[in-house]
Image (cartoon, rainbow, N blue to C red):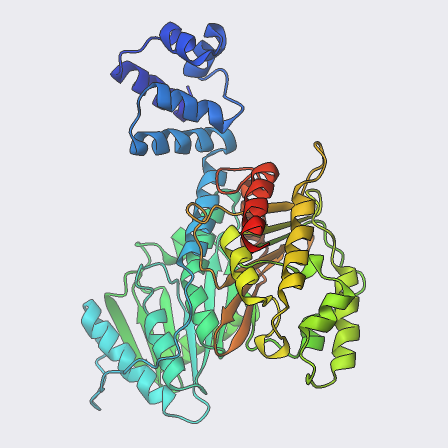
Length: 481
């Protein structure tokens, strides 16, 4: 039996409802329902599962558990857990703060050769980082997994790089390239995102290996922190550590260990702070840079594919430097954008984002200092073009979806761009003061996990159907006309 059939049968037994009675109430043929409850068949639609849950008078929690078991049985546990890891990652991304954390004062004292307990390990780490941060051109090298919820020592590193902008951090992580471990790779990457968005001298690299063997509980001191003055070996739970000063034989061995490992690593991501001028930002794809499938997820109104040359003239500021060149480059970029199409390009937006665009006239895909608000007639024109795409003839696969923001939760400031065959994904954060910050994920398994997640929510309970999307957009338009 499947986990779904076991869950459904358990609820039927608790309600003392027979297969024949549930068949009569639901209108599902008895033989088909019997095969479902024995795990030999599977409901094709989630609506069938929700209908069965209603007839069984399940609580909201029980309904959700039944849906989860349905999803696990439908796609398999490995794919399900990977998609849930991506969902959690997107939900937990938050704005980097500009506020510099106050670092605790560190008294100058001799460092112990060994540390026992989390507080002592953190205190020694703090002292080592403080000494390195105060050096001109300080560099911290880290070979460690961020696996703990509080993401130590990333929390300390983020504070130091905010307080000391010239401090450089080179961080090596281990990913497992076995298919069943993809979800764990996403969980390892997720705690890095706030650091990537907030500190531009933080560089992450990765190699493939057996994570449990290298960084599991049976490993004595797998985590390594290196500065110009000290090497600190830390246990998997960061509750024990060994400290070696520069000049010692152990320091030299660990320095070589890190260098050898670094030579066999790949860049995990590329960070572009304050995305460049409009001309560069909207450069068309390079020759031969063809893309099989593109997904763009944004809570804001994504109006680029709907723009015309005339609207671009209204949108770009009149006093924009090199405006004519920016206009030409942008029109070239527009011509390279594929229309929303289920087979090649899918855009996700939200009703709240469309309303915000109608209120402000700003398209947030642009650097804010380059555009002026569109007049109301232009705003309505763009939304009508969106509505016409959503209202395509029956049978035409539309690559547009409205997100259900009560279910698909992620920061309204975040944009996710995935290009399938390029094996990379891009996360773009719209910062109110620093502008657009882009993190390009270079590791193929994480990029593929993001792409697969977006593909999975196209026709799911997280998005509205094209028909329902069209109905809600039409209702919104009527409020402004």
